[in-house]
Image 1 (cartoon, protein in one colour):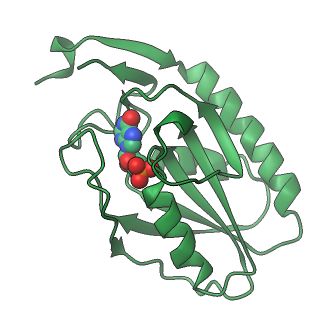
Image 2 (cartoon, rainbow, N blue to C red; image 1 turned 135 degrees about the vertical axis):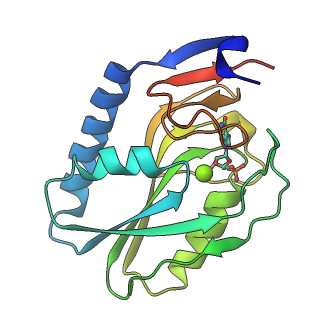
Length: 176
Ligand code: IMP
Ligand code: MG
């Protein structure tokens, strides 16, 4: 199915995204001042958000990547999370900010958070661009949330449906 054949509604425009990500960057910079910071981008969806976020953090920040199993081609989580790609950097004594695109059931972030805590970081915090608090299957609260949304399936700004639509610059709601 091509995008033009599906009905979408814009949820967040480029302007709204840019201004919120800049605000998050300011808050994170203040909170992490004086620490050795690693931004850990959760592949693939958080690539766009992470790239924008770190450019709004005017201090030294190292970048690393982790990938966990995704939904495949489904709109709903299978509930099983495995690490597909491990980070490369030594995290001992560092501040790690896990950067995610969206938290839905909470299963992925719970798994990533536990895994990173076990790697010896001095501090682990989490930033998510979007949050669907009503969709939680396990409790998880991110330290920094761009926007909280209703539990609808969204695409764009890195978020995909079956690997498509990540390159849409704004965030749209994908209708069923
Ligand atoms: P969770 O483990 O259920 O919290 O799912 C988190 C992951 O599912 C996110 O990192 C996304 O990759 C994906 N996901 C959840 N909701 C959406 C959505 O509305 N659009 C696109 N991807 C989503
Ligand atoms: Mg993701």
